[in-house]
Amino acid sequence: MFPDPGRRVRALTALFEVQVDHARQHGTVLIAGQDQGVAVVLEPDYDPSAAETGALRRRMARVCAADASTALGYLDALEAGHPHRRPHHYLTLLAVRAALQGHGIGSALLSDLTGRWQAAQEPAYLEATTPAGRRLYRRHGFTDHGTLLHPLSGPAVHPMWRNPTT
Image (cartoon, rainbow, N blue to C red):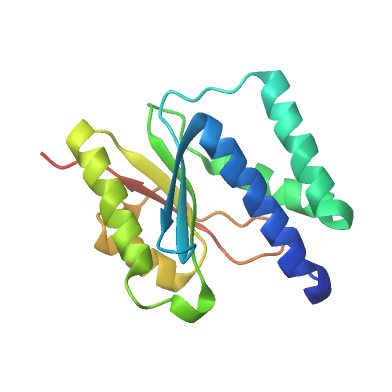
């Protein structure tokens, strides 16, 4: 999404802040430890109005600056593959500080979330953007869902779905 390495960290940080702020209003934000990791989820009953969607897109465009059209195009490609067949939790972001990856932080966040979803007997959806993420999500009950998404010139994204087990 952000080809210029000089802007990438700043733009991704700002974009993640927008996602977190949005989920604080319409979902769940779990933070592990002292900001070691975060999970951002939109709730099943979230159904944004056109005005709200427009405002969110404008905010994202502002923080992405010169890369706004690329970033919004990427997000549009994800939205095109998003299932709307029934209400579900949408894990929009799972992130762990790079130095702490592989130490169980992401897995702990997922265990917390999947326990909640299981207790409520509610499904969940996400897009896995890396092979390691895809393996992690599979360990937590997600399965591949639909066809691979190919947003812009970026890597393939794997839509994944988790049904509650009985």
